[in-house]
Every structure is written in structure tokens, then in C-alpha cells.
Length: 225
Image (tube, rainbow, N blue to C red; front, side, top):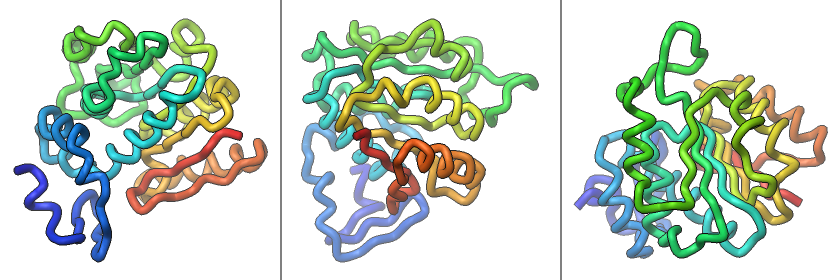
């Protein structure tokens, strides 16, 4: 089983952190663990189990709010697919899940090249969600592409752009569209390697009356008021 190397009797080790004496309640979520096991195939994908559970929590909250779901920088769509499979997202036709990514890398793009970036990645991700009519996969640079394809109201947003200016651009464009009670997850906020994002985002949030909660997973969280 995927989890045997990560978890024993309240102890969790993975994704550069270690805890002990915890309930680890997300491991008792059968639908989540089954979806995670089906979709998380690589070592990196398996390592972010707890981070994915945080995303799921935010999405479940969003299902009871007005607005759609947004993920900027979905890469292979693994996280979103786990979420969709867990909550049976096709049973929520009134909601849409917007996924954005460049899907390719070249010398003109500021983000880091990942293993499966390539000309066919966008089509592979669209194929992954072919049974979900309410998942919209958009290829383009954030925030530029948001002017053409973006929801008017947002109930959950996940930013994982690995680039400070791109994330700031996404916030400028989309944050005010988030409905009260909506959860924002900043994937890179707590990581030293991406400290530039924290340094540029903290003043922005403070100007808007918010403080980011840094989570042990390395994520940052904001609840829209």
C-alpha cells in the first residue's frame, strides 16, 4: 500500500516534515485515499499526500458556497483529478473547476521546467478529465490568460505557480472574485526556496486586510471575508 512507508501509529513522515502523536484523520477518509492511490503515481505525487488533503478540505468547503473552483498551475492535473474523484465532481454540474497551466517550457518562460512539460501535455490533461464536463483546462500564461477564461465568482482557489510575479498577478485578477468564506491555498508560501513569493505576497495581503496562515505542510492559507 502507498501509505505504509509514510505512516505508522500516529507518525507521519513525508514532504520534508515529520510529525508524531497525531490522529491523521485524513487517512480515515476512504474515498480520498482510494482516489489518491489511483492517481498519485510518482514519488513526488505520493509525497504531497497531506498537502492534497488540505486542498480537498478547501474544495469540500467550496461545494457549499457560491462560485467555482480555480487551480493556477495544474501541471499534470493529478491533484485536481484526486479531488474530482473523491467528491464525485461530476455530480455538481452547477460548478466548474478551472485549471490553468502553460504545459510547455522554453527559454522565454520564467517557470522551472518539469519532467513532463511538452507539446502534448495539455491534451493529456484534457484526456484525464474527459468524463468531467465541468472541468475546464486552459493553456496559457497566468495572469494573461485570466482575462479570457475565468469565473466571475470563486469558491476555492489554489495557486502553485512557483513564480512570485505570476502569483501576484493572479491575486490581482481573481482574489476579489472570491466569495465570503472561500479558501485560498498558496502552495509555495512556506518554502524557503520560494521565499520571494511570501515576501511579495505578505504586503499585498496586509494592504487588503489579511494575514496568511503558514501551514506545517508548507502551504499558506487565507479565508476570504
